[in-house]
Length: 198
Image 1 (cartoon, rainbow, N blue to C red):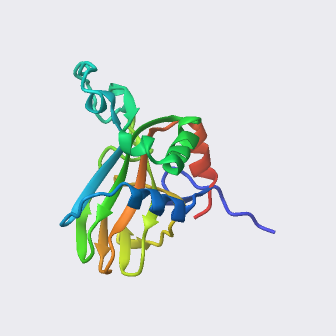
Image 2 (image 1 turned 135 degrees about the vertical axis):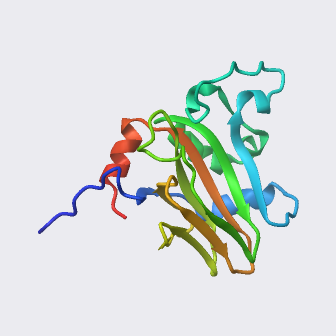
C-alpha cells in the first residue's frame, strides 16, 4: 500500500497530531468574565515579561523583533487562572520556546480583511511560528488561506503559513475564539509539521 509523502515546509496548512479538549477551553474562556467588544479582541495569556510585571526592566533594543528571543516571556494572570489552558501551553513549553500566547476573539457578523503576517512562517529565518487551536468555531465561520478554506474544528491544532494571504469571515451569530501559540521553531516542531497529514 502506498504511503503519503511527508509534508514539507512549502505546505501552507498542516493539521498536527494533537487534539485538545475544546469544552474545557470554552469553560475557562467563559470563566474569565471578559467584557463585551465590538469587533476584534485579544486576550493575552503569555506576553513579554516586562509588560506582565512592570517592575522588570525593559529589554534593550533588538535588531529583529520578529525573533522571539528578543525578550523574556511570562504567563499572564489570565493563563495562571486557567488550569487546562495552562496544561496545553505547558505541553509546548516542554518541547520548545513558547513566546506569545493569546485568545483571539472575532465578533459575530465580522470579518478580518485579507492580510499577511510576514514573520509567521517556517521559511522565515530567525522568526516565530504560530499554531492555531480553534475553541469556538461554529456555523458561519470560515478561514481562508491562499483563497482556499481551511476547515478547522474545535480542539484541533494547526500550523498555517501565515506569511501567505489569509482572511476570516464570521457570518454566524456567535463570536469566534481561537487559541494561538507562537513559538521559536526547533527540530521537534519542524519534524512534526513535516510528518503530519492534513
